[in-house]
Image 1 (cartoon, one colour):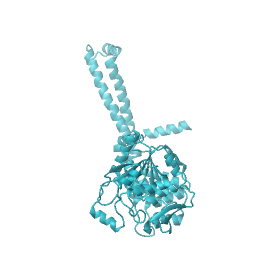
Image 2: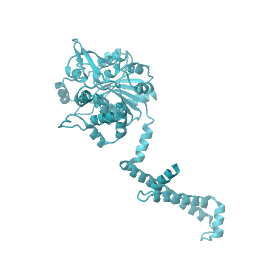
Image 3: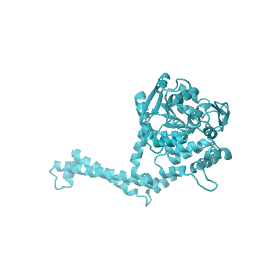
Image 4: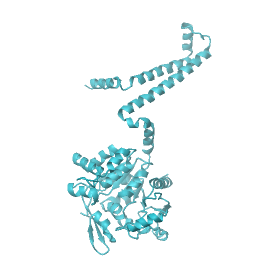
Length: 430
């Protein structure tokens, strides 16, 4: 049975129309000429045979025979290279036509990036999206641990109506790690503007449908990762459907991630309900094997710290031999970090993670424009102050660099951020 199957498979490759046979024949002919050329150059017995039997014009010139051999070898090498190149191109055009013109570049890039450092990022929202877009250019070994406590927008609706984990931040991370798939990226980020699907993004609906079909949220993420051909992997911090709760300085209890960000009340502490929330084993394993663990940037309480509330994650980070880095936000956030300085951001992270657990703090020194400053002021946000004296008292090493270039939004520049991370890894890990 297997012999028949293999025979049919071979016949399909040799069937007319896919332009395989001509290139195979060219390669075989090139190999034959290569052998003949080698004999002409180096085999005296072959030279004597030619002289005695064929009586060719230059039978008395050993030098001419060598020249002929070199010529045949050059022609043969050209035929072999041409045949192999076009054979590969023909196969790739048949299987994946959009990669045909740059297959060698893709193979080289994948090979190099597969040797990159193992990086674990912890967070959510646009901050993590921005970070991942830069990191995928220096390594394929990325594990994005993403918050799944969203209660607003499309994710919140799907969570309430279908009981699925909110897919919004997962979707953003998948798109951020996608490898040169602009159409799929646009499709996953497309948001319906009318009808019963108004407010929903296609990516959220796709992940939801895939989760229903596979019966497993993690498998749905894996399938979506394959479609987008991402570099690295994306994992939810937990698979349990829990609620994020905040206690304000005034003692008021606020339930739900979306409600917390809209409250505009100073947060005293956040916690999960139920309190005992278990992580994925894959998440703990990735943290244990990491060379670098990055927290932030992103909403301090609802994107970063909330992941540290999952049982086992803080302990895994502390016990990991990886370098631990916190990337401070560019701006304060209304309802979460009003008037928070860089040191205050770090203090809050270490309050949930453990004092002295962060090795490096990365802060932005670029001043945003007055126009953008006024725009964010109307939204209740201001640029985070870098209070160096207080940071020194925390005994943490910090890196200051201009990390903002976008004149329309106050967000980190992906490439500059990746450059800082790469330089830090070279310095610390060699």
